[in-house]
Length: 410
Image (cartoon, rainbow, N blue to C red; front, side, top):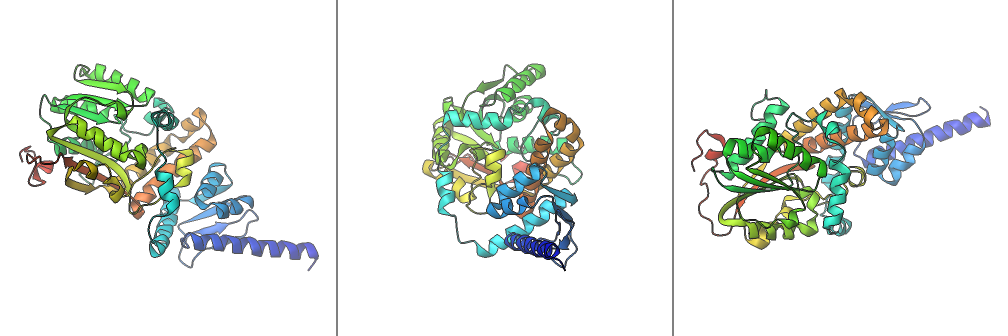
């Protein structure tokens, strides 16, 4: 054997051992690996669900240096490919990593706490919102439902479509709040306005909805005019910290993740100031199964400034204000299905998205949507709806029956 051949074999063996070390770190998922030189092997003896194709050697070192950011950026740039079912691959690697971490978890890290406590000022919040939500309505229209709802759907029947499940979610929120005609509702972080419009159309309430996204507010105002409810719905282009009206119900769906842990108590104080003594409030948020920092790749490329709280951290909104927690519901598996459907819709429109942005953008968002679905599927991510009332409010439902029956009684 000549020297060059011997050196190549030694390098190949070294590369394989590096990858095996990396796979042990992520919990030895049931996948196979194909290196840039054609060398292919299975991580475990179980049948692989898909193959991770490492196209360049430097991708190994990027993943060893920082697994989440390294894999995410290498995949986005095409240095890594997935041959086979992409969602099955993401589900399997997430499952393996989650199980491994569960065996060694000893509580939140100091770095996580320091990161979470970094304040999102109004200026930083506007920048963060612009980064994600002002990509253009045409982009989101390609893969969301017709109402442009970008939060967890509620599949009240197994056969429900995404559009039907989103309407069911809007109504589920309204039922929990026991809305009555003529009431005033404040919504913090209204997206493209679907919930505010639904409340006005179907429950005859007056809604004041706040949002930092210019694109979303403009779209929502157009929809209110088209639906003839612009006299009952006011979309305010401003930060939630500017809310100063009084209301019968307060609702926030999908905003808490962007508030930042340092501002949770501020949000709670605003709710207390606005919500009437006999009112009800609901906050719907992605949460984590345990306190930890948000995935660094997500923070860097998708949601800057975001922090996904644990349910315990979420209580920082409620406990300082002595709110009574009435109901806590976890819709985790509903969000796993929602994200999987978004990914399917996104893949169907991938060529259009590629023309609008780039191949790297397509791969980045494929990973984000697939990874989100896998996070909910594995249990790393949760989706909690917390229904609450001001301290001392006894005009509250005694059972959950009113949330599910046609009757709106207590």
